Length: 139
Image (cartoon, rainbow, N blue to C red; front, side):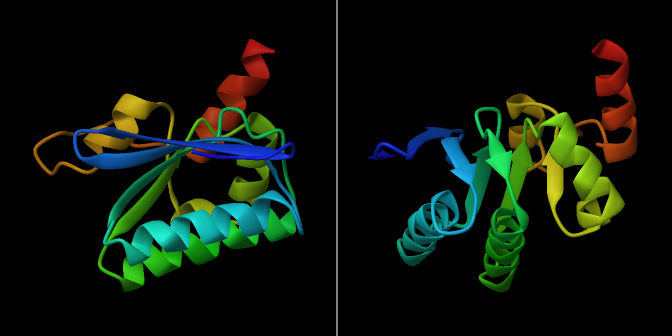
C-alpha cells in the first residue's frame, strides 16, 4: 500500500492478478506520478497482469489519462496486460469521444476484469457508449 494525504493505492491479488484500488486524483503533478512510479515498480518486479479499480478516483485530467495510456502500452510492450474497471460516467464519456476504448480494455466490474484474463471465460463485451447511456439513464 502507498499512502499520503493526497492519494492512496491499495494492492491486492485475485486469481494471481494484481489489483490496485486507487483513492486518488489522477491529475498533473500528484496522483499521476505516484501511480506511474507504483506501476513501474510492479513491472520491474515481473508483474504482467494488472487491474486498476477507478471507483474511488475523484478526478482525471489529461495528464492522468496520459499516464493510464502510457502504462497500458508499457504492459503490452512487456508482454502483459493492464485493464481498468469502474470508470466514472464522465470519464467514460471522455474516453468514448477520444476513442480510448480502442487502446485500453475497460470493464464494468471486477469479476469481468478478472475473467478477461482467462481465454476460457467470456466476460461481456464492454461497449463504452452503451455504458455512458446506461449511466445517464440511472441518474
